[in-house]
Image (cartoon, helix red, strand yellow):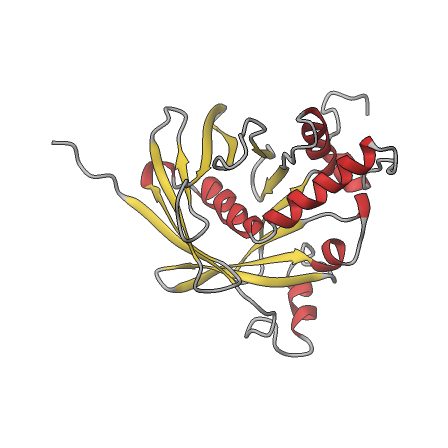
Length: 255
């Protein structure tokens, strides 16, 4: 008889409003910035990570960069912090890579993200699959390096569901996790479980940032679709912000 797998669980809870206990107080953002240089002036905390009912992390995004800019100046940057405001990771929407994939897919929006995690030497590429028929479930994939070995994962949205639910598969195509989305809150809430064997800090942080990204998923698709459409019509001269360009640097370049 096969033993039932053991799971680790956590909850990603995204708030509807920024009027919550973490940010109440005129000096609160300044305190956060003092604790972490990664918490920039334009950051807005919009969610939390809970384990066993206790808050263990916070999610924030660069509000001005996403909501006040247009064209290729508009970028999504989400950051994950510990409850003590120590930086754990960043998810960047990669405009160049997303536009390249979407251009190749005939303007079908294919999103590409770069995940940079604290204590890791390698960045993680989290990308949506371009192979998707209209109405079919959305799929994302990524891989992580552990002790020099790659481990591949894919996320597939459920065919039918009240919430925004995803199933996590390993490289042997085995179901190893579940992202159970709730619709009871407009901000978004996901109860996540993952098989113990795969529930290392790296994979958990990627899934936490992925859940946070889902709040912006529709807007990101519209943004990339619009950029590629304008580019194809000759209405847009593409440009990339310096930080994103750095993420494409050749590691073997002459220094």
